[in-house]
Length: 314
Image 1 (cartoon, rainbow, N blue to C red):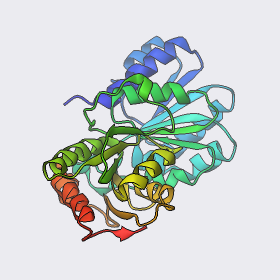
Image 2 (image 1 turned 180 degrees about the vertical axis):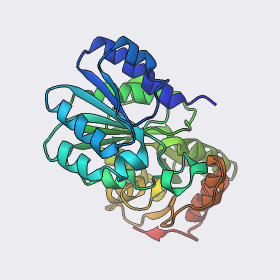
Image 3 (image 1 turned 180 degrees about the horizontal axis):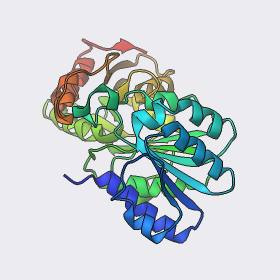
Image 4 (image 1 turned 45 degrees about the vertical axis):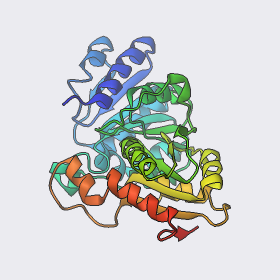
């Protein structure tokens, strides 16, 4: 199965690297073959440092301090969780810009177990100053948002999922810090990020069959977050359900609820990765089913809010 997002990342590195001699890519023993076009076209600017993730981050920050733009790439648990101190001190504390790009967030590496899972990366980076968090789940989102954030003086984190949501957005609609209204509705707001947009749209179809008009919002940028779009939607619907492949705290649900805190009488519900290690071994799809990331469950939760039989007041 093709890894669309990783391939898009590798192709973009080649295109940008040919145009900008100051782009360097440092990896942790990953994506060697995908990045070969960049390595061959840009000799001396591709470094496979190995399984030394904190060292990779420190090297990247040091090179970036010289005026270069570094892209640091490996698996999410190793780049974010293992190397958080280096990200904090070597990039953020120094006010140095750069790009962090991961694969393997949430349970994308489902069959490799909890050592290769990463449920909390967004929350870990959200609290660090001078950071941006981007969660693109289609090629056009990555290419547009990489261009928007390239050499902007901030440390931008790209969380690349294995799955895509399958929606074709126009390039002009993708803007850093802006969400998208993918489907209008008046009864309940479904807010999604990453590949779970696909689940939200399928749930909206199920709700429509029951006479419930669900508005579907999608957020490819989580920091900065488009709180205005979210607040305007729930001011009309008074009901909100968020779905995300992340823990409860510091992700989409957290910032969405904060954005909607002034909406009186808001009913809300959230689908997220629970506060437990996902010890069951299986495929990505099996993990989604086990956690309730399904159109059936999302539609049922939203319908319950519309019937005022579930949810909590914000």
